[in-house]
Amino acid sequence: MRTMGDIPENIPIITQEMMEKTTTEIAKRNTGEKESPMRGIKDIKCPSCGDNTMSYADDLAFDVILSGERIVIPNLTGLKCSKCGEAAFDASSTKIIDSLNLMT
Image (tube, rainbow, N blue to C red; front, side, top):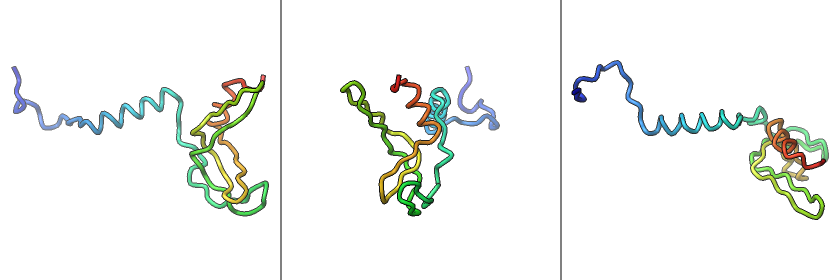
């Protein structure tokens, strides 16, 4: 039987924090979740109001009423204007919306 003193020094010790980070990363990969390429964009020109007030947002929601039923998809990412509220979803969020086939 081996004891802790028998473990060679060159074997890394995996901490609980490392396990949690790995589990989170694997979950993201399994769902296809990637960081938005729009992250970090700030103060670009809004196509609606023309002001330089459009920035990255990770709290967007898609809200639509179809056949009298309200459908809300929260936690989407993209750009949002802080002046007029215009929003543009990034590719990842657009795929989520499209995957639901809401418009058919």
